[in-house]
Length: 186
Ligand SMILES: Cc1ncc(C[n+]2csc(CCOP(=O)(O)OP(=O)(O)O)c2C)c(N)n1
Image (cartoon, rainbow, N blue to C red; front, side, top):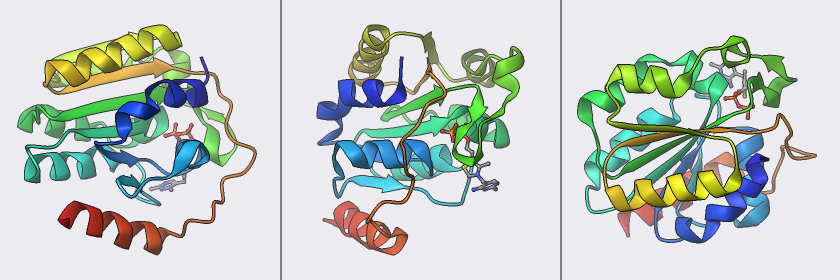
Protein backbone atom coordinates (compact mmCIF):
# COMPACT_ATOMS: atom_id res chain seq x y z
CA UNK A 1 0.00 0.00 0.00
CA UNK A 2 1.17 3.54 -0.62
CA UNK A 3 0.40 6.25 1.89
CA UNK A 4 -1.14 8.35 -0.88
CA UNK A 5 -3.63 5.59 -1.72
CA UNK A 6 -4.45 5.17 1.96
CA UNK A 7 -5.02 8.91 2.36
CA UNK A 8 -7.20 9.01 -0.74
CA UNK A 9 -9.27 6.12 0.62
CA UNK A 10 -10.21 7.99 3.82
CA UNK A 11 -10.10 11.59 2.57
CA UNK A 12 -13.90 11.98 2.48
CA UNK A 13 -14.05 11.18 6.20
CA UNK A 14 -11.61 13.95 7.01
CA UNK A 15 -13.93 16.74 5.88
CA UNK A 16 -15.69 17.27 9.19
CA UNK A 17 -12.89 16.16 11.48
CA UNK A 18 -9.85 17.91 12.89
CA UNK A 19 -6.68 16.62 11.28
CA UNK A 20 -3.06 17.01 12.45
CA UNK A 21 -0.17 15.58 10.46
CA UNK A 22 3.57 15.42 10.87
CA UNK A 23 5.78 17.38 8.49
CA UNK A 24 7.28 16.21 5.25
CA UNK A 25 5.91 13.56 2.94
CA UNK A 26 2.52 12.99 4.54
CA UNK A 27 1.82 16.72 4.74
CA UNK A 28 2.66 17.21 1.08
CA UNK A 29 0.62 14.16 0.05
CA UNK A 30 -2.47 15.22 1.98
CA UNK A 31 -2.20 18.71 0.48
CA UNK A 32 -1.89 17.18 -2.98
CA UNK A 33 -5.32 15.59 -2.50
CA UNK A 34 -6.77 18.86 -1.22
CA UNK A 35 -6.00 21.20 1.65
CA UNK A 36 -8.81 22.14 4.03
CA UNK A 37 -8.93 24.70 6.87
CA UNK A 38 -9.38 21.85 9.36
CA UNK A 39 -5.97 20.34 8.43
CA UNK A 40 -2.82 21.32 10.32
CA UNK A 41 0.64 20.18 9.26
CA UNK A 42 2.92 20.31 12.30
CA UNK A 43 6.31 21.50 11.09
CA UNK A 44 9.64 20.92 12.84
CA UNK A 45 8.27 19.48 16.11
CA UNK A 46 9.01 15.89 15.11
CA UNK A 47 7.23 13.36 17.30
CA UNK A 48 4.69 15.77 18.72
CA UNK A 49 1.77 15.50 16.30
CA UNK A 50 -0.02 13.04 18.60
CA UNK A 51 0.64 15.33 21.56
CA UNK A 52 -0.92 18.25 19.69
CA UNK A 53 -3.83 16.03 18.68
CA UNK A 54 -4.23 15.02 22.32
CA UNK A 55 -4.49 18.63 23.44
CA UNK A 56 -7.08 19.44 20.80
CA UNK A 57 -9.05 16.26 21.51
CA UNK A 58 -9.20 17.02 25.23
CA UNK A 59 -10.26 20.62 24.67
CA UNK A 60 -12.85 19.72 22.03
CA UNK A 61 -14.47 16.50 23.29
CA UNK A 62 -17.41 16.91 20.91
CA UNK A 63 -15.13 16.72 17.84
CA UNK A 64 -13.17 13.82 16.41
CA UNK A 65 -9.45 14.32 15.85
CA UNK A 66 -7.33 12.35 13.39
CA UNK A 67 -3.52 12.36 13.67
CA UNK A 68 -1.38 11.20 10.76
CA UNK A 69 2.01 10.25 12.19
CA UNK A 70 5.15 8.49 10.96
CA UNK A 71 7.22 5.66 12.40
CA UNK A 72 10.33 7.82 12.78
CA UNK A 73 8.32 10.51 14.50
CA UNK A 74 6.64 8.11 16.94
CA UNK A 75 10.01 6.50 17.70
CA UNK A 76 11.39 9.93 18.54
CA UNK A 77 8.69 10.44 21.18
CA UNK A 78 7.63 7.01 22.44
CA UNK A 79 6.56 8.64 25.70
CA UNK A 80 3.83 10.35 23.70
CA UNK A 81 2.07 6.99 23.48
CA UNK A 82 2.00 6.62 27.26
CA UNK A 83 0.58 10.14 27.62
CA UNK A 84 -2.05 9.42 24.96
CA UNK A 85 -3.02 6.23 26.80
CA UNK A 86 -3.06 7.95 30.17
CA UNK A 87 -5.59 10.57 29.05
CA UNK A 88 -7.37 8.20 26.64
CA UNK A 89 -9.16 10.74 24.45
CA UNK A 90 -12.03 8.72 23.01
CA UNK A 91 -12.30 11.17 20.14
CA UNK A 92 -8.80 10.62 18.76
CA UNK A 93 -7.70 8.25 16.01
CA UNK A 94 -3.93 7.96 15.73
CA UNK A 95 -2.68 6.67 12.38
CA UNK A 96 1.00 5.83 12.05
CA UNK A 97 2.18 5.44 8.47
CA UNK A 98 5.04 3.00 8.97
CA UNK A 99 7.36 3.00 5.96
CA UNK A 100 10.25 1.73 8.13
CA UNK A 101 12.14 4.83 7.08
CA UNK A 102 12.90 8.48 7.76
CA UNK A 103 11.74 9.08 4.22
CA UNK A 104 11.46 12.86 4.34
CA UNK A 105 15.15 13.31 5.13
CA UNK A 106 16.60 10.77 2.74
CA UNK A 107 15.22 7.38 3.66
CA UNK A 108 17.30 6.13 6.56
CA UNK A 109 15.90 2.91 8.09
CA UNK A 110 14.13 3.16 11.45
CA UNK A 111 13.79 0.56 14.20
CA UNK A 112 10.60 -0.79 12.63
CA UNK A 113 12.83 -2.02 9.78
CA UNK A 114 14.56 -4.27 12.30
CA UNK A 115 11.46 -5.60 14.00
CA UNK A 116 10.11 -3.01 16.44
CA UNK A 117 6.32 -3.26 16.50
CA UNK A 118 4.67 0.12 17.03
CA UNK A 119 1.16 -1.29 17.49
CA UNK A 120 2.58 -3.62 20.13
CA UNK A 121 4.35 -0.72 21.82
CA UNK A 122 1.15 1.37 21.73
CA UNK A 123 -0.85 -1.51 23.24
CA UNK A 124 1.76 -2.02 25.94
CA UNK A 125 1.64 1.72 26.64
CA UNK A 126 -2.06 1.32 27.35
CA UNK A 127 -3.73 2.43 24.12
CA UNK A 128 -7.00 0.46 24.33
CA UNK A 129 -7.36 -0.36 20.64
CA UNK A 130 -4.53 -1.01 18.19
CA UNK A 131 -4.18 -2.59 14.77
CA UNK A 132 -1.55 -3.17 12.12
CA UNK A 133 -2.76 -3.17 8.52
CA UNK A 134 -0.99 -3.80 5.24
CA UNK A 135 -3.64 -3.18 2.56
CA UNK A 136 -5.83 -0.21 1.66
CA UNK A 137 -8.99 -2.25 2.29
CA UNK A 138 -7.78 -3.26 5.74
CA UNK A 139 -6.74 0.31 6.47
CA UNK A 140 -10.15 1.68 5.45
CA UNK A 141 -11.92 -0.93 7.57
CA UNK A 142 -9.72 -0.20 10.60
CA UNK A 143 -10.16 3.55 10.15
CA UNK A 144 -13.96 3.26 9.86
CA UNK A 145 -14.08 0.99 12.91
CA UNK A 146 -11.96 3.42 14.94
CA UNK A 147 -14.20 6.37 14.06
CA UNK A 148 -17.35 4.46 15.01
CA UNK A 149 -15.88 2.87 18.15
CA UNK A 150 -15.27 6.29 19.67
CA UNK A 151 -12.29 5.18 21.66
CA UNK A 152 -8.60 5.95 21.40
CA UNK A 153 -7.13 3.85 18.61
CA UNK A 154 -3.66 3.58 17.10
CA UNK A 155 -3.60 2.14 13.59
CA UNK A 156 -0.19 1.25 12.20
CA UNK A 157 -0.44 1.21 8.41
CA UNK A 158 2.55 -0.47 6.82
CA UNK A 159 3.25 1.53 3.64
CA UNK A 160 5.83 1.59 0.90
CA UNK A 161 8.73 3.97 1.40
CA UNK A 162 7.65 6.26 -1.42
CA UNK A 163 6.67 9.88 -1.17
CA UNK A 164 5.77 12.93 -3.22
CA UNK A 165 8.10 14.34 -5.84
CA UNK A 166 8.37 17.58 -3.87
CA UNK A 167 7.84 18.57 -0.26
CA UNK A 168 7.39 22.31 -0.61
CA UNK A 169 3.81 23.42 -1.07
CA UNK A 170 2.36 26.88 -1.57
CA UNK A 171 0.87 26.86 1.93
CA UNK A 172 3.19 28.55 4.39
CA UNK A 173 3.48 27.46 8.01
CA UNK A 174 2.08 30.74 9.34
CA UNK A 175 -0.85 30.80 6.93
CA UNK A 176 -1.74 27.25 7.94
CA UNK A 177 -1.34 28.13 11.62
CA UNK A 178 -3.67 31.15 11.55
CA UNK A 179 -6.23 29.48 9.30
CA UNK A 180 -6.35 26.40 11.55
CA UNK A 181 -6.60 28.53 14.68
CA UNK A 182 -9.56 30.42 13.19
CA UNK A 183 -11.16 27.12 12.22
CA UNK A 184 -10.82 25.76 15.78
CA UNK A 185 -12.33 28.92 17.24
CA UNK A 186 -15.22 29.14 14.78
C1 LIG B 1 13.53 17.14 16.34
C2 LIG B 1 13.70 16.91 14.87
N1 LIG B 1 14.67 16.09 14.41
C3 LIG B 1 14.81 15.89 13.10
C4 LIG B 1 14.01 16.53 12.21
C5 LIG B 1 14.21 16.33 10.72
N2 LIG B 1 13.18 15.49 10.14
C6 LIG B 1 12.12 16.01 9.49
S1 LIG B 1 11.10 14.86 8.87
C7 LIG B 1 12.07 13.62 9.45
C8 LIG B 1 11.72 12.17 9.19
C9 LIG B 1 10.35 11.80 9.66
O1 LIG B 1 10.25 10.40 9.59
P1 LIG B 1 8.87 9.65 9.70
O2 LIG B 1 8.11 10.15 10.86
O3 LIG B 1 9.14 8.19 9.65
O4 LIG B 1 8.08 10.12 8.42
P2 LIG B 1 8.43 9.93 6.85
O5 LIG B 1 9.37 11.05 6.50
O6 LIG B 1 9.07 8.59 6.69
O7 LIG B 1 7.12 10.05 6.17
C10 LIG B 1 13.19 14.13 10.11
C11 LIG B 1 14.27 13.31 10.72
C12 LIG B 1 13.02 17.37 12.72
N3 LIG B 1 12.18 18.02 11.91
N4 LIG B 1 12.88 17.57 14.05
